[in-house]
Each structure stands twice: as C-alpha cells, then as structure tokens.
Image (cartoon, rainbow, N blue to C red):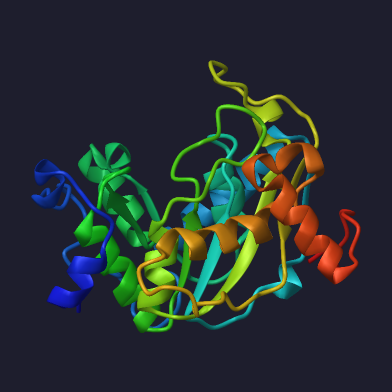
Length: 268
C-alpha cells in the first residue's frame, strides 16, 4: 500500500487531480479478475482477436522480433513507445502471458467495455495527472510479481520521433525496483494515419529488447532521470529517424555496446 512518504514522492498534481474519480461503472469489483498469473477467458478472447485482427489488417506485414527476451515472471515493466492507435493492439495482442496495462479513462465510458478491459487486466488512468489510484494499482501489480505494460511517453507522438518519457515510470521503478524490457514499435504511424478509420498495409515492426536493470543510485526523487534511462533503451531499438529526443543518448548507448542498429532478433 502507498504510505504518506510515498504520496509525498508522487508526481505533483493540481487540487482537482488529487480528488480520486470513481471507478468506472462496469469495472470488476475484484481486480485482477484472476490472481494466479493466468489469463481470464475474456483476456484470452480479446488478445487473440487483437492479434488476428492486426495481422489481417496489415496483410501479414507485421514482424514481431525478440519475444525470447521476455521473462516469464515479474515483477517486470514492459516499456514501449507510442506512435499510433494500433500500438495498443499490436503490443497487447502479441505480448504473451497475463500482463497489466493502463488505458486512458475515456475508454471505460461504457459498462460492457469497462467490464471487458477489467478482465484483460487493463485499468483506467487520468493522463497527465498524478492519478494516485492508478499508481497504487500499478505498484500492487508489480509487488505481486506482475508484468506491467507502459507507454512511457503518456500519449501518441505527433511525429515519428520519441517524446520524453514521463516521470511516472521512474516513480514506479523507485517504488518497486525491477527489470525493464524495452519495446519499440515503428511503421504503425504509416499504417493508421490520423483521421483514417482503416489501416493501410505497410510494414510494421514490433521489437522486444533485452531486459535491463535501471540505475537507481541517483537522487531519490529524480524520477525523470530514471524515466530517461528507459526512454533511451527504447530509442536504441528504433531506427535513427524514430529516436526523437533520445537520439544522442541512444547513439551513445549503442556505441558503448559496440552494437550498430539493425533489426534482428539479437538487437539490444
């Protein structure tokens, strides 16, 4: 549970943001629906539908690389960039096992939808605020050994380049130290251009990197510094034109490893 000291470390919020919003109507009273590390039936159905739907929509042009880098057990943060509305289906549908994830509260507006997301271990978050309920739920998921999927930029990038990771991922890692698997998606922004309802069949790549242990030796409240480590490792998996604000840091990381960027199962 979150203590008073933990609350003092959480990212700052406005007075309005500090008032917790009610759990959406239809969201399961018991969360997670299953606590044995396995998928609920609705989770399996939705994940299979997402994976199949994306592959059909892209016409077989989706490449999924590096799944062997994904540990079977947590605690673990699976940290991804975010370019398109397709990314949640691509990452969620192709990441094996029972994982947790946050989604913007607006997606939980209808009772059946809230019920469905809850059964998929997806819980609501009020973006760009210190949503303490979502933070507490994330912490509890990690503390029970779960694997948590995060889109570290907080929202989709407007252009094909990484935005700075939000400090929330750094806060979680200081609260529950664990390994991180960086995940990179690219090409999805061309598949589903903003304003289009149907995706185009273009090459899209989803790559899982090797787990790494963030350096937490810096100042206790430097959540942004830890978040930037995560952002750098994600960017190191991306082609140079997608690295955005982490271009220099990612190049330096690859140089230290003496690893040129190339899309293979053995990428960092």
